Length: 527
Image (cartoon, rainbow, N blue to C red):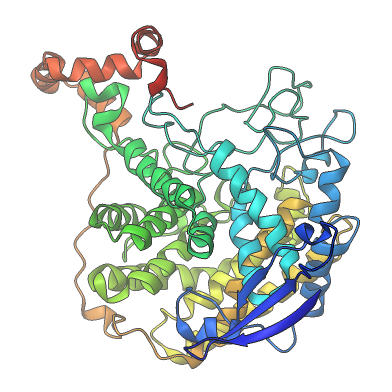
C-alpha cells in the first residue's frame, strides 16, 4: 500500500490514499479501497463549502484528544458499535446511542439507536474533508446509507406531517427492545422515563450531511432524500393538507414549533426546517424552498422583538434557540445577495440576540440545579452558544462591540470545552456529535472579523422602518376561535360543504388509511 499526491490538469492537488497493490495474488486489497480527498486549503479558498476553514496548524489540545478518541480508542464510534453488535438488517450503519445508559433502569448495555441526531453524518464528512483521514469516511458512508434506507419514512400514504420525514432516535434512557431504529417499542420497560410519540417531527430533521454526501458521491438517493425532507417541511406546515383543512387553511405551525406547540420563537424546530430548506435550495435553486425559508424566518424573529417573554434562559425548554440563530446566519452566508432584504431583516433581528447573549448567557454546568438530567451533554450544548456568539459578531454594527462579543464567545466555547473534557463520559455519542457539529463553525469563526462585512448588511439600522410584526394565527388556534365566534360560523359552513376537501380529510384519517390498504395497488406503498 502506498500514498501519493497527484496534480490534476487544473493544478489542484488531490490526495490519493490507500492505493492497493493489484498484482498480489490474494484478495486482501478489497479491504483497502481508493479514497480521494481535496486539499483542505484549496477547498477552503474555493468557497464551495460554506463555513469551511482549512485545518489549523494547531488545535485546542482537548479537541485533538477527543477527535482521536472518536476514531481510535475503545470508546470510539467503531469500537462501541461492536459492543451491541450494531450490524443488523435495520440498524447497520447507525451509531450506538450509548449516552442513553446514564439514567436508564434497563439491563446494561442499553441498546439505543442514534439516528443521525445533530447531523452526525455531516460532522463526520466535514472532518474527513478537513483531515483526509479515511476512517471518518468508513464511518460516514454506511451511516449515510442507513439514513437514506431506514431513517427516512418512505411513504406517501400517511399524514402530511409524517410522510417523507425523518424518524426520531430511539427514546431517551430506554432499551430499544424491538424498535430496531424507530422511536419506541412496546417492549420498553420502566415508568421513570416517559416514552413520547413515534412519528417524525421538525425537531429531528437533518439534511446537510445527505447533501454533502451527494456532492461527494453523486448518489441520486441522497439528493432525493434531501428533497424529500424539504418537501416534508412545507407539507407539514400546510394547513390545507391537514385533517383540520375542512375548518381552517392557516399554517399548522408544525415546521416552526419547539418543545411545545405554542412556541414559535427561535428553537431547533424552526432552525432545522430552515437548514433543510436551504439544503434543498442549494440542490435545486427552487424558489419554493427559499420562499418558505423567508416565511419561517419572519415568523420566528423580528427586529423589534422583546426577548424577555421568550424565557431563553430556561434550560429544558429553550436550550436550542442558538440552532435557529445559526440557521438564519447560514441563510445569509448561502443566499446573500439573492435575498438582501431578508438578510438585512436577519441582521436587525439578531443584533438583539447578540446583546442579550452577551449580557445574560452562562454555562449550564454552573447552574446544574436547573437541569432535570445533568449529563455531559449540557457542556457540549454550551459549545453551540460560544460559536453562535462568535458568528453573531458579524451582525453587530459597532465594530468594537463586535470584537468584544467575538472574544466573549471564544472564551465561552473554550470554558465549555474544558467542562466537557473533564467528564469521564465525554466520549458518549451525543456530546461527540455536537463537538463534530460545532467544531467547523468554531474554527471558521476564529478569523471571522478579519473578513469584509457582507454587502447586504446595513450600518444604519436605526433609520430603517420595519413593518409591525403581525400576529400569527395557527390552524388549531384559528379553529378554536372560529368555533367560539358565531360571526365566523357561515365561513366554517362554506368550507365544510366544499366537497373537494372531503377526499383529503378521508386520506388523512384512520378510516382513509384503511381505505388505502384495501383499494390502492400494493406497488404504490413505499413504507
